[in-house]
Image (cartoon, rainbow, N blue to C red; front, top):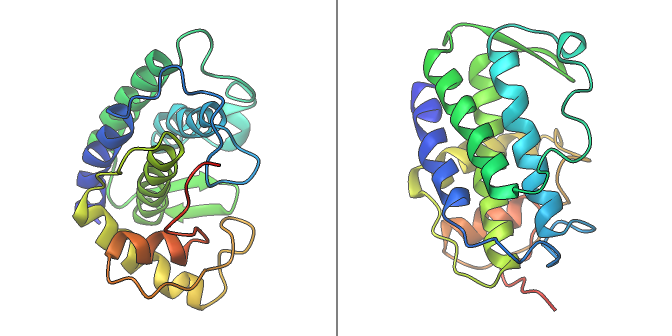
Length: 188
């Protein structure tokens, strides 16, 4: 699990380094979500993380991160949120539990979920703006190891689209296909 937590800062840098400015209205592989919507989702998750890692409940956090959390400076909002999140992950109790919408879960489970979201959404954002995603290879492997048994057991309906078939040998293509994305997706 410490490996997963250690990968979060590196995986977040992939998002931070994407040239998203001025591309907010571009469609993403996430149906109905534009680039800004997807960055808002990631930013909100990482605003929540420090609270949850400190042991706060969903009720204690409340609705403060509902709606638009990006404001007039989307990348600045992302950088501030991810910086606080990464710092909180560095201080988290590896044996702790986190309150989520699925109830209390072990910290390692939450870390894996956050790494999957960072990694797959970095791919989504990169594809949306037409750049080749440079995902962290170790993060891709951790995400595959986490998601393959869950998807195989039918545990992720509603979180990701149904898996799509791919013959690709690329581990990135295998990951995104497993999570319902066409590896050849490109904006129309």
